[in-house]
Length: 438
Image (cartoon, rainbow, N blue to C red):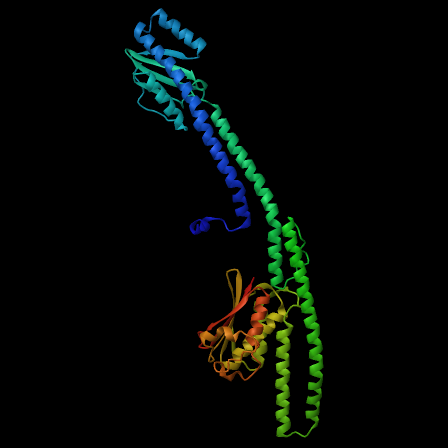
C-alpha cells in the first residue's frame, strides 16, 4: 500500500479527478471488452463463416464443372445478384506472396480461421486494399479464383462506431469533471493563499468565503481567527505604548537629576546603569511589539540592507557588504531593519570582522550575517534562538542586551513566512541566515 501511495497524485484536484474518472474509465473499458468479446467477435465470426462457405461452394463447383461451363457461369451471375459476391477466374495466375494486415488484427484472424475451416486449397486475402470490399483469392487447378465481397458481409462494421461512442462519452465526462472539480478546488486554493499571506503579515481584506458549505465554514473560521489575532495585536501594541510612556518618564527624570548633580564616579555609574536600563527597555519593547501593525510593501532588500550596514559602520563596526544590484521583495521595512540591526549588532559585538550578503536561493531570498568571533556550539543553536537566553559561556559573556537579538530576528523572519538558521561561519564565528520568500 505504501508503494501505491508514492504513485498517487498529491493534489486535491488530481485526486478528486482520479476518484471520478477512474471508475468511469474502468466501467467503459469493461463495457467495451464485454461488447467486443460477447457480441462483436461473435457476429464477425458468423459473417466470415457465411462468406467462407459461399467461397468454398463456388470453389467446389468450379472444380466439379470447370470455369467455362454454363452451370458455373450461372452460379457466378446468381452469386453476384443475390449475395453481392463477385467471382472472377484468372487462368494461369498464382497467389500473391505479400500480405498486408489490418489495423484490427482480429478481423484477419477471424476470416483466416473461417476460410481454413471451409477450404483445403491455398488461400490469400487482403482486407486493406479496398475500403469497402475484401479481396479473397483461392488457388485452383489452372489458375486462381478471385472473390470480391462487400466488407459489411465479412465483418461487423458497427464495432468501430461503438468504440468511438465509448471514447467520446469518456472524454465528455472527463471534461465535465475537470470543470466541476476545478470550480470546487478554486475556493480551497484561495483559502490556502489567504492563510499563507496572513502568515506573512500581508493584508487579506480581499478574501471572501466561497465554494461548498464545508469550505465556507473553514473560510469563516479563518476570518474569525484573523480578526481575533488582529485585536490581540492591537491591544498588545496599545498596552506596550502605555508601558513605554510610563517607564520612560521616570527614566527621563532620573537622567535629568543626575545631569544636575555634581559629576562624580557614583553619578557616572548611575548614568551608565540608566543607559543600560533604557537599552534593555528598548529591546524588550521591540521584541514584544513585533511587526503586526506595519504594512508590507515592495522594497529593494539589497538597498535596505546597505542602509543598515552603513548605520552599523558609523558606530565603528568593520562590516563587509559587496552585494550589488536590486532585489525586490514584499516585506515590512521596519521589522526587517530591526532584525538586521540586531544580527549585525550581535556580530560586531563578538567579532572583529563581519560579512553580510544578500542573494536569491530558488524561490527564497537569503540574508547571511557572519563574523569571526567565538561562535556558538552546534548543540546550543536552538537555545540561542530562545528569548532571554544569553549563552554566557559561548558568546563572550554577552555583556550587552538581555538575549533577545536572535529571538527577535527569528520572530521577524517567521512573521514573513521565513525562518532563521544558525551555522558555523567560514570566518570562524557564527553564521546567521535569514530565509525569506520572494
